[in-house]
Length: 405
Image 1 (tube, helix red, strand yellow):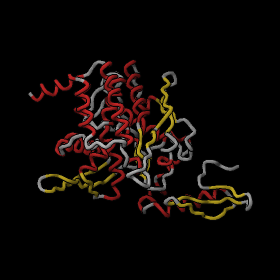
Image 2 (tube, rainbow, N blue to C red):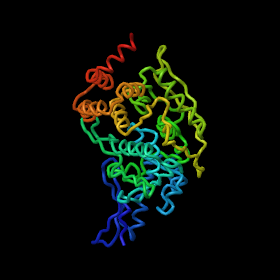
Image 3 (tube, rainbow, N blue to C red):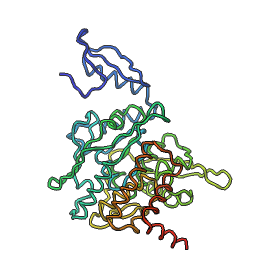
């Protein structure tokens, strides 16, 4: 019986054989005809690996990745997850709880699944065995709202004019009775999670579940992606784009203190040995060179971080501590508009009333649409958004004036 989960294979009725083919750089290449579908699929897999993978990735594919391709019955025991470098190069704003849920959904994904099976994550894997109270469920609702709102820019041939923004996940569901969270990755994102013969990066679930900062999550994937290039040099502007956004921490000294150093310190307490060299033009640091060594791998025992849903949710020190789903929605909106975490905290402090927060979401919606659709260009979208908020909410303007005075 034909297996629909073997992409690149089709049955030729005229010849009575299976045809193997794959796409490279937008061109379909034929691999000939085979007696069985499995033989055709093996030829497709081999051709993709030989034409795309580097020697280091070929070694990973043959030695490590099989643990990522296990059957669904063994999926809960998977220690290694993977995603395309396209997704790592297209960062999106997440809270710590959202980042953990992404990791666990990725762990529950079958590589041969076309995306038709709902991915189920036990709540115990997400937050530990602790009881979840009313506030805990509100925070989980906010995390699901945040994950549902994430949109990813996928690569297009003409980067200047073309546009393809897709949702990361959909149909997310929290079933408190069953003690599970479930959902699907979107069909457009699935190839970047399952078709891992192009440039991809592996992550250890044990490492990722022990991380305490959402910034460290970003750096974890970047370090895993760059370790084969070590030493690897990155411009400071690019480093901000890949981690906190272009506007956050405009001074490198602030970025280094609040993001770079804490993230690398946390990773070095795991299975990394990372050091940096700062390159200067004049007196300003314009790029950072990373020297990366990773000693982890294999079947590590999870060192799961237990999120205290009854109290603080253990965000990064610079993250606001939202007390309601409404505040979490506001924080997510302001991150998309590239306000710094310190600015987000101040906005939530000055505007604690839910009516004001609802008004904020309404006022900023047109600006967000213009920014995401690129229908209007803003030199500094964060500054534009902040000025709009000061106009709409005089209390913010007065707070800023009093602070300067």
